[in-house]
Length: 45
Image (cartoon, rainbow, N blue to C red; front, side):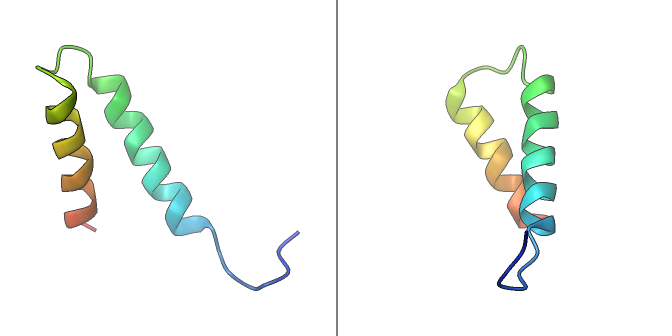
């Protein structure tokens, strides 16, 4: 139930992109590289 009229769609889209990136992250060099990739997702929106 949405009482305040705000949509969670944009946030859900970001969450889905992060989940997909997490699935592809196997083999990334380190956690910092993964964090940089997440930050890059926000720059492309």
